[in-house]
Image 1 (cartoon, rainbow, N blue to C red):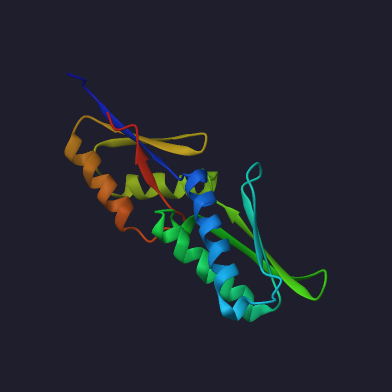
Image 2: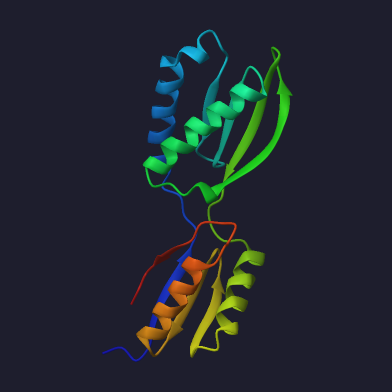
Amino acid sequence: MADTFSFDIVSEVNMQEVDNALNQARKEIIQRYDFKDSKSSIELNQKDKYLTVISDDDFKLKSVIDILQNKLIKRSVPVKALDYGTVEPAAGSTVRQIIKLRVGINKEDAKLIVKMIKDTKLKVQAQIMDDQVRVSGKNKDDLQAVMKMIREAELKFATQFTNYR
């Protein structure tokens, strides 16, 4: 029996599910009457992990993003993983918005998680490892209490728990 247990707090996005949701959103945009003859499109940059949404005007852009969010939710992709850029004018009298996919926990957010865990006064250790936070302790109940606290916290990014041992 192991004397310490641990798990990792990560922020991941399943890129295959994002791609599937994008394909579904594109099909819906093509079929909808209110998008007939519009220049609406959604592009995914897999390498740099961002989406480019282009449409005729702000109203149609918001509709495209709403369709995209619904498809992502249905495919269990956390909407908190989307980091919206500003709406900017694009070529051909269209508007464009860049949406970055938040993959990994940055240093400031990781420090916030570690501080939240230390404030609970539970007998667990939290350490930052690259883009994730490892929590370890001798008592499984303490680790589950930390998981519950992180789930209930109103964080501005999506979190998952992996590598539970």
